[in-house]
Image (cartoon, rainbow, N blue to C red; front, side, top):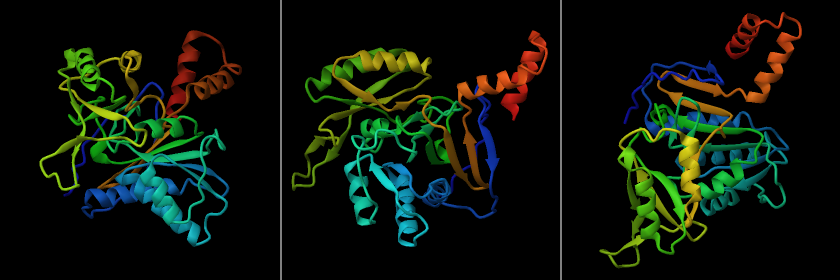
Length: 302
């Protein structure tokens, strides 16, 4: 299925730099766009790096590409930190050396997909069921590169109408799901336990989806904007029984978006970098408010 090309405004307070890398009149299907984004992201991987290996249909392409470059001798001495059992098995089959956060508490880069990306580069992740390990790994990397096709761009978190997952303990899961739904009643929230059909011969049996950590997932579906994401995050995490949620707030440093017209890279300027560069401007200029505003505008537009 061809993916339409909506136009989104990515102008944010910490303005991402945008770079369109290629254009093509060829209509591409969604999986081809995912592969294009993944291959572009892997170009940022260098020999000797410790790499967070994401989970999901888009991240799979990135892991495949890393394995291919290793076999070709174009990458050497890298170490992968997988975010799921599935990715662990994939990486082993490709000959990618693996380790864990105990041995490597800081990573050079992580590459993973996302289910939604809002204009401030906040994400929804975890529809593949690996959100806890993904957040643990991607929260300690120097550079977190997100790879998506343009269908994942949304105006606000939850706007796609698809699930925002929350990992919970199995104990009294109905109670926890009900509390989560009540939290976001104002946004028309419906909370559903994620299930999968059993493949052990019980055709009519539906069992809870169980994460690599032995937990359940409750999928939250919103009809409207949930508002302040930080407040929403805090409310979810304060609820006993919740392990983690699928909002990845202010974590992505780079988003690679593949669309029918090419690949766009969006880089988020870190607040500390803005302040540092603002200081460099203002020590050579008059410190009047007008000059400060002008200097900040120059930085954000650079």
